[in-house]
Length: 162
Image 1 (cartoon, rainbow, N blue to C red):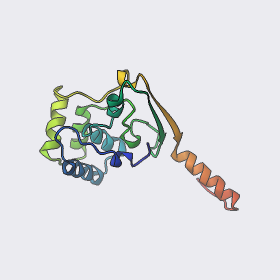
Image 2: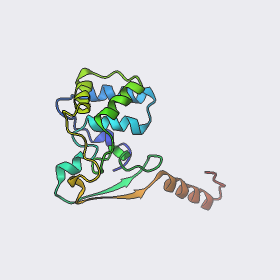
Image 3: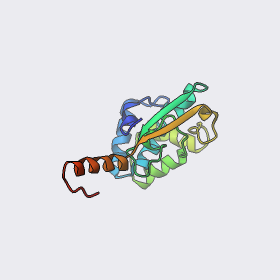
Image 4: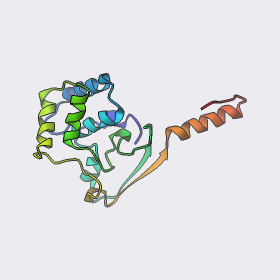
């Protein structure tokens, strides 16, 4: 998994259309919401993100190698991590949409509201059996990439500043 994986692993949940998801993502990105908030919503509109791929694969062994492009390296945010427990709820997604004033199609808001009311299953969280045979390895981060680039620049005779 790397940054951008969220956009590439697209499997809309339920009856959502790709157009509904695209409109929602565009609204979120244009709102200025941080990536954690954007991905919280995107996970709840997906059949695979937010630990759901691990749920679908269970009881198979799932091993993920992640390259983080997220400040703080929160693995649940990298690529809307489909194989890591999710800590967000449907109510959190509605809060994001309201806080950043993001208008979404009814086909998006209705299932989020149903989830917040307890009528739709939440993403698998910590302790879910989906993760009994799942492991994730962080193999690279932004800071490691910057340090390697600085070392290469220094080797080439430059005076890098991070």
